[in-house]
Length: 454
Image (cartoon, rainbow, N blue to C red; front, side):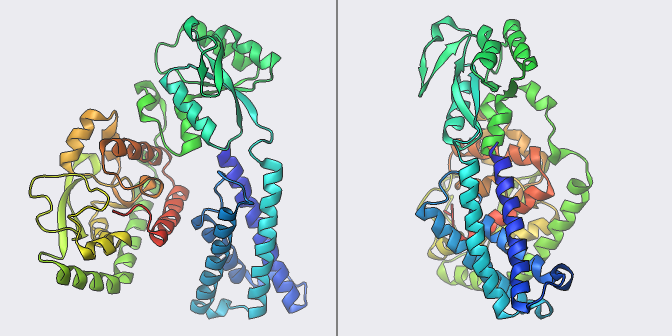
């Protein structure tokens, strides 16, 4: 799957950066001493800065060629970003500082060999290399949804067609593929055509004969996936409209498990991040407060009711970015180029500075630093009625940033709320320290490139 290929690309980068850093020390110092023990701090700084910047500049995306001009421009920006952070890092920690020769040689070696590793990776693990044939069981809405995902994503599968027991669907064209038979031919496909995988895309009414054919195929070596799981792995979101109560009941949601990370460590991290954030952002907050006050009449801070953990309503704080009469006629979704936004509001929204006061909500315990974005009670009442399983997003604390925020645009409709719920459920299901770190890194990227602000 593409997640394994991303991890392989990252692992290769890790090896390349470590080797290049060691070589730069050896070449500059004219010695082959044990550089790991002599320059542990410096090597760690080089590795972490390069990997973090490569991630921020989307150098682990597998949706295009590494040879494209677009990718090359991001690659150069990632290298420059890493070099800048490394220079700042060594300025802050002078004991770990290295000579300019080591710094420049390291940058040169990494830029050449990290890109060379990408060209090798593309040649060996490109989109058309070693792909496994897969059939989609079910040509209905769920089957078409997973077909679209398999078609659009560079992954380890090669679509062979659909399987459907409805005689009227035989040979029916769906996209570039057809319904090639009923479930009775499934086991034979693996033996005759070398098809190694199938995805079950039937939400309900799974016929006993169908299940028998699926089990027989599985016993003959075919890999069987359920539609929600493969959709989740390929897209980073859970297909809400194609879930069943049975799938939810039997699936582990790590975010609600009573483990040390979710009950203690995450809260400690929230407190440290929020307190540090408030202190570090104080100069920016003062400038923003003055700008808001001078730009329009009204309070500097904006308070609004939001729905939090277990549906509890709390008061959220933000810097005011709209006119005081913005909702004189009731609550409405924010929209692009919203006329209610003030001049100062447009700027502070673009750089996300209006979110700074929410760190006080995190200190109070109303919110987490990372989690589903809190929604207003007026909208929640409507969304609970219109979107299946919407209330599940309230099973953990809301956050200032989250998986939906770094993957999807600003929500301004019920359809947007559905899309964001799919990301929120992915986060709740897969919550871990590693996923939280990824979200923090992506948040840096979103803020740097001012994506999605309204």
